[in-house]
Image (cartoon, rainbow, N blue to C red; front, side, top):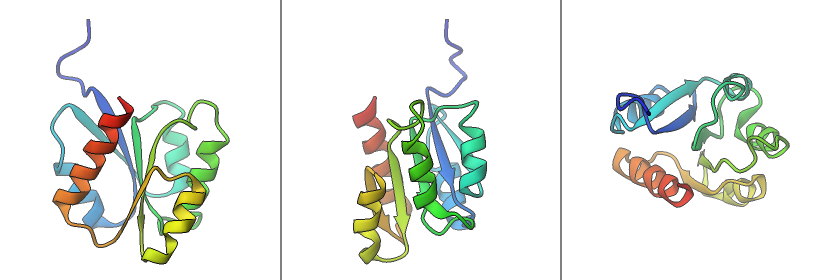
Length: 127
């Protein structure tokens, strides 16, 4: 029997931006566990032990960035079906986000309510 105190879904947030981290840390109910990684390399290491329902990645995170993470996930049979939500610095990068396989992308800054709503909507489509 599942433990009712355990989260039902996991969101992996890949960002070194304190604002994004705070928004996602407190924006969800206890049913969604939020896990953080500062960069793409750490995110891939974490996904060895967890398989999140969604990955939120800030495109400017770390030296490799979100595009590298998307590429690495696409090459893994275990991770390729996980939707990626990319946060972009500028609208012109939307084409690149789609080419990288992002299921959804938004330009920063993004209001907390819109960020949480977009994540929940995308997670509900996957469930």
